[in-house]
Length: 359
Image 1 (cartoon, rainbow, N blue to C red):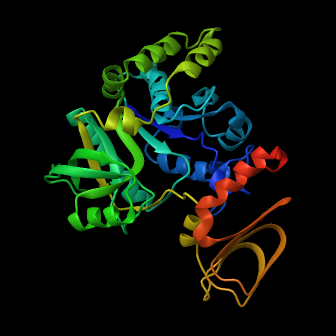
Image 2 (cartoon, rainbow, N blue to C red):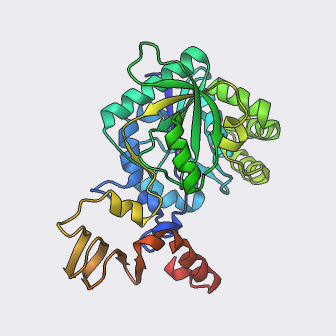
């Protein structure tokens, strides 16, 4: 579609994926499954319905080298570098300012860079259904994932009126966004029905989104306009650095989606996982008859239900069940699968000890 833009947000640090995820090559640039990095898989997926010249990526300046290495298929001017991370609303607003200059009537799809998505055809059809709502109803549309279990790691979206009509994919007005629940609350959501996981995928007309920013985050809107006014001028980089550093860091959920009334949801039934930890990678990996998943060379003896990644050489695992082992260069991680979310504490301790050479 000539009027369709895609924004891929690629500025995360991926600390839960240490030791493979490091400052020079965070999680989104890693080949977790297959030969493509997570970012490259995301670009390929959106290239099915977005021209390469209309795909934007927002990342941090410290990731410029690896980002440019991995994106030869995109124009360099479409790589936008934040001076400092400010959460998702400023990130999306900044990219919208770039796209607005090219086509103020365009529609933008927003996606994280590091999620696992399978069934590309169904994904495309789901996005196109969201695009139709954005165009016909001036809606800000989220893609909600049908819950498979009472997850506590995701935010949820409560739907209201069913507007599906004759469409093939279920569509709803949104009642409200809710924060990550505890397990009992998550179970109640699934029993009640009408709740979906918040995928972080959004679709909207650029003009409609910027109107929402102007209404609900007026200070940010004014600052983004200051930055946009300098695009293409010698003073752009300085203005971006000065103005953007001063904006409030806020999520698009909190800043817009929890306040606007024109919010819709399209049901996503493609395979989706946010790959939040090594445990997620294990669960989505192929396994042998003992439930072990291995990438690289490994010898496994009397061990079950474990994940092993060996960057070079061989890793031997003997008599251990339900563990994660990741060997990368001069760093090695061994942890219980149930503790995968706590790997970021290792990163925190290494930082505190000044051992940044391991980060």
